[in-house]
Amino acid sequence: MSKELSPNVEVRSIIEQIYKRITHSYVEHYVDVPSMAENRLELLYLFLLEQGMPKEKASVLCTATGLVQLGLDTHELVKNEYDSSQSAERNRQLTVLAGDYYSSRYYHLLASAGEIQAIQVLSAAIQRVNEAKMRLYIAGRDSKTLSDEEYWELRNTIDTGLYVAVVEEYADSADRRRFWSDLMKQTAKVESVIGEWEQLKWQEQVPFGFARFLLQKPGATLAQVLSGVEGKALELIGLCEQMVRTLHPAETRNMLASITARYSHRISRLKKVIEEM
Image 1: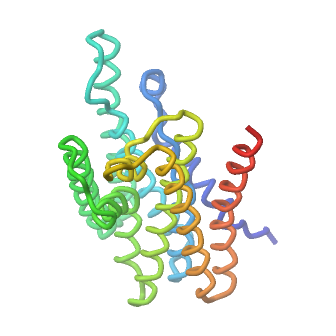
Image 2: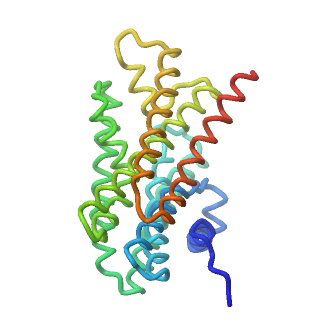
Image 3: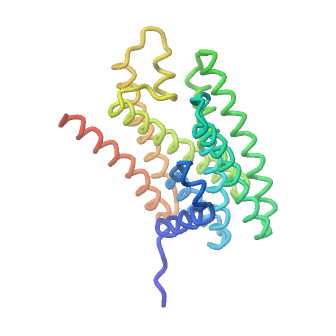
């Protein structure tokens, strides 16, 4: 009898399949392929399995969602300003085309699998994500001060819009829909804030995100921003852990607890390195 693989191992296999589907030597020579949001994919996969979806179909939906996310993330790499060299212009054009290519792969995959409903779900989600990106970009360009709630609403849509759309479509109850959507958003917040914290410490620059939002407040200093980012990361991890403890069945709860523990370990390592500096 073959041993059943853990969801984490299965998600890693899904990610390998995603990268195989987008492999193109010429593009890879000029374009940096973004890393996958592995934790978000694992959460989505666990959710679909909890809904009783067959593993094969869950894998197809996760692969398609990952392909779209790669396309959107690749477009994020397009800079507003490039030097005037031919190689820079080629890099810009290829980055746009690569993002389009990655996104188009999801349509082919779902169409081949007969998952027309999923195509509609992801297509609508792509529109919402791009609208949120434009609103956040315009706010930054015009130095518009957003409220905490406004900022996180846009950031959550950008980071989790695809995954939440799938949850909302396939959840079998309002409670499940609310729990998994909130968990997606909270864990994405944790990842975003920890990433900014690391950037603040290692690169000593303020990333375009929550840290810059904090710095826009009157009288804010970099030290206050750093403290605020650290506090927000710890607060969000606490919320995620509290949510997971309320989940049944226990098997899913334990798997989710292992995901949230990764964030805690990442913060612990970061604080330890900082203390030793």
